[in-house]
Image 1 (cartoon, rainbow, N blue to C red):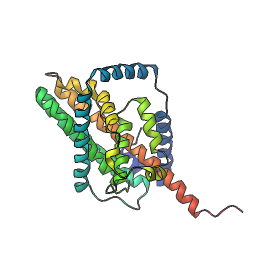
Image 2: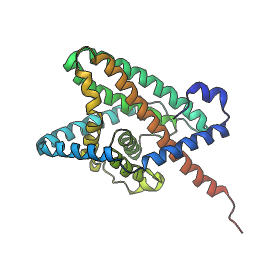
Image 3: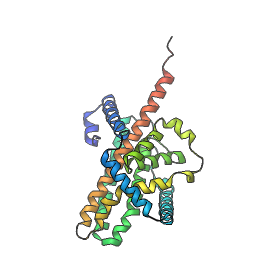
Image 4: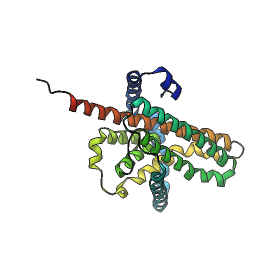
Length: 265
């Protein structure tokens, strides 16, 4: 749960807002670390069986396509992202973040409605269009929290956030562990982004959105389904990103406090 912009601007001082945000972060962290439910486990086993039936060459083609699509968006979005917001409180950072999330939710809903109304061909075009909106939203949120994405390790963090939002619970737990204590974890990343696990990303993402997006291809109901699904997917990504950056903000704040606190005698 994340408060809206009006509540942040009118109801909360910075210390109060930080306390509420950290409470929401704690709840989110607990959720990220939950064990998969029985339903999650059954669903995951079915998805694995389906994936095993698909020829390896098909997996390779799909993985390569998604990899190139994401890489193109990652480097393209870098050009048009606003400069990182510096020296602002968490409350002001999140006012900016919520503004960007609201903008992309409306844009995604409009795009989903148009492509959903256009039948199968336009419905298929929704996949790369929506993917581009999601990645652009992540770039804007990184900037809102003060992080410059010219460093490829920041873009890896964006891909981790992406997977947190659109993966099975088991995979989500694994990704979350990679993001804890990110200041230290980022030092262990390979120098080449090609070494990123693109195969897992494409399978998890495809499995997560398949059922929701397939309904968008159905005549008559495609437009409203596309609008609602895109709106919810972008909202989910936005909330996930906000909590991921809250986690970094808290870790960095604790580290800074230790540096300025005098040693105990």
